[in-house]
Image 1: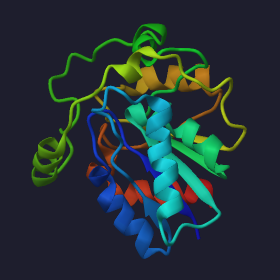
Image 2: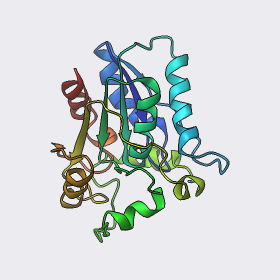
Image 3: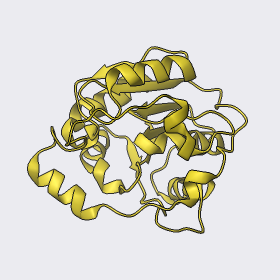
Length: 214
């Protein structure tokens, strides 16, 4: 069985992955999805990665086979976690894809990001009660993590998969296809969901995670 180490996105919490975790756990896997210290100005991406690494080590059902999953801004942290845990694979879910030495705050300009202009970029396909709870749990975001260069000299040399959400209004499909081709050199797997796929399509996302990495 596999341990899925989940790295949530900016302003988010591990709770957003609880439905995916339920499905994966029901199939015998272990899921670790800690809240990252995203509001602490004294901590950077490396510290965020440490939070996940420590959570995996402390979990009583952790297995040697670890797959790291990064969502949205968590794409900047997932490779740091994967490198330290000697992960067997990594899956990025509608995530930012950094380059070595690139400050997260520069990612938007460097990738040619343009706003979709749509008002509801996050919750349009999430059930109302889940969207309300997710927004209630939302947190602030430190600027420390935005200014320091991404620390790895290269991406971890492990199988890396990208799940592109075809209904994403924040990272639109056409934009992300270009980013994935340029920065990962691979073809993404597509999922008919918006940016918060873990809440909108949890069972489908859980199935993709296992099918891509088992």
